[in-house]
Image 1 (cartoon, rainbow, N blue to C red):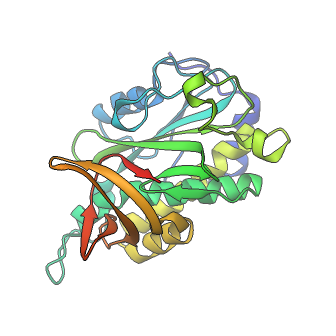
Image 2 (tube, rainbow, N blue to C red):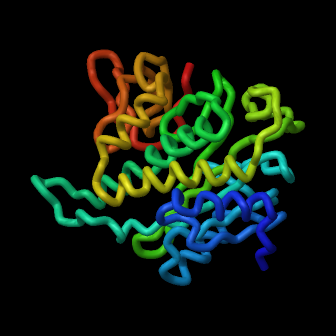
Amino acid sequence: MSEPLPADFAEAFDRERSRLGRLGSSVLYFSTIGSTNDVAMTIAARGASEGAVVVADAQTAGRGRRGRAWFSPPFSGLYVSVVLDLSRALDHNARGGEDPDARRRSLLTLAAGAALAEGVHAATGLQVDIKWPNDLLVGPRKLAGILAEGATGHAVVIGYGINVGNMAYPPELANRTTSLEAELGRSIDRAMLCVETLVTLSRRYDDLLHGRFDAILDAWRRQSPGSVGRQVRWDTPSGVQSGITAGVDETGALLVNVGTRLERVFAGEVVWT
């Protein structure tokens, strides 16, 4: 069972309701939950729940991309999942051979990454970089991660975790992770951060639904300096490949110059070296 929304979160949602657009149709809060994405996936499976938001102070089974655990101690981060419905799109009919629904899905994670970077900046003033496809970094250290999961039909769930407070990270994370408070040297209003990231996610969601794909790509490119001119490596069925990043294409694939050829990387673990 969800719990009453804390007063500061309730006030923030009420104050910014007009800016949330399609998001925040319902808000479920948990002091501790296994995974906000699991709750959101259950909501999506039950029917039309566009804009439903799940917020938790702590997760006991938080997860990131590629099945990794997401360290989610109490009150040290912001853990949020949102139900989106891509069937709300206004341009399902293909034009000139384009499949807008397929492109919409391919750009979903980039849209979420751009939105989260914009929301963090709006709430805190901190400029962050995006590492393809959607990890948020400050320098070499990870600040936030995003996990997109398909539900039933056109429904998708976007979950994100932002490291907010100074915390005792496990040894394997200590040198690779940072938090907003560690970077800024001051306390962060988690309720404001929650609402501002949802406001910017709502805007980028509208871009997706209205087919404004160039706006999403432009926003993502502005915040991802490492997507051009950086040495990377990644695993393939034929072995490890390496090359120099050359941006992203119109579908969101990472472009990498490997010798004299241009490779398109669609998924997998890319290591910046």
